[in-house]
Amino acid sequence: MTVTTSPAPFAADPAKSRGRLHPERISTFRTEFQRDRDRIIHSSAFRRLKHKTQVFIEHEGDYYRTRLTHSIEVAQVARSLAAALGLNTDLAEAIALAHDLGHTPFGHTGEEAMAELMAPYGGFDHNAQALRIVTRLERHYAEFDGLNLTWETLEGIAKHNGPQVLPDGSPRKGPLPAALVDYNARHDLGLHTHASAEAQVAAIADDVAYNHHDLHDGLRSGLFTEDDLIALPITGPAFAEVDALYPGLEPMRRRHEALRRVFGAMVEDVLAVAQHRLQAAEPEDADAVRALGVTIIRFSDRLFRELKVIRQFLFRRMYRAPKVVAMRAEVTEVVRDLFALYLDDPGLLPAEWRADLAAAGNEAALARVVADYVAGMTDRFALQEHARLLGSDAARFTRYIVSGQG
Image (cartoon, rainbow, N blue to C red):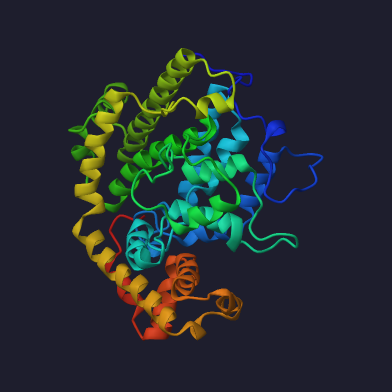
């Protein structure tokens, strides 16, 4: 495997960026993509990820991943992959850091509840909500709402998982979320094409990170054991290699050594596939990658099949474990209750949010303001507000604290 040390011709070039919606003076000491990364890190939404669920509710244990630690891990993988492929590491890192900004409290459970609630009002999707956050809801700058990120970073947030519309403009997977439609009408992100190679790197880095750390967190929670993983592809050979090299190794070290090999197998597979596909396609610039019509940064078919087996195992033993399912039901109730309460009585919203109600000329616009507010809550704040406004017992969620948190 060849590691690239100089920029590839198809790498995004910050000097050739398509710019920002609101023109700004060029920085004297940072590239455009470095500025994007820094603005994301300093945003309020990024800080809130510290107290948002990855799989387990944030307060269940200090060692479990939150959305913040997950995002940092994704950014590390993205930066490493981008560097090895000769891509722009700053752009890959910025997109990776921003990719989960739009998540609701309680992870995918909260998102599913919000999507159901917002279905009559233009829908809800965490990628589209991330775009809404960085283009509208972060309000710190004197001259514009949002972070005024470059076109390339916004494109990556919007479509790092692939094109959002077909060439004729029709949605690929059901109605486009209103947040995406609204911004794209002001600033065309080319939703019919694939994103840059850097955005594709951020997307696969997300897969690498969660496949790796969900195994870690599942083991720590006691929902399954190392013996269960020995029967699976990728993880089984990893444990066998560690046992052959270090017989009798202390359990925690054995676990770490095996899972770091799983991590390495995924990264090496992505690099090998990407290098082969890029050499075959020979894209001459970043736009040529967008025009290829296929995802260029991906797992091999073999590894993808093996990861699918692991994901099925995690779904059965972790994501739908009885304790987790019980927690999902309760936190879904919290999101639904808060949304209904604020929609019925918008006066309960904080003063700075009530200012947006003047521009909400219909129920859909009002629902969007409520969704923005509830979606921005951390796990902890959502539970506290539910207890304060509806008299619930936030402490009841401690029933679902899992064992083995250390």
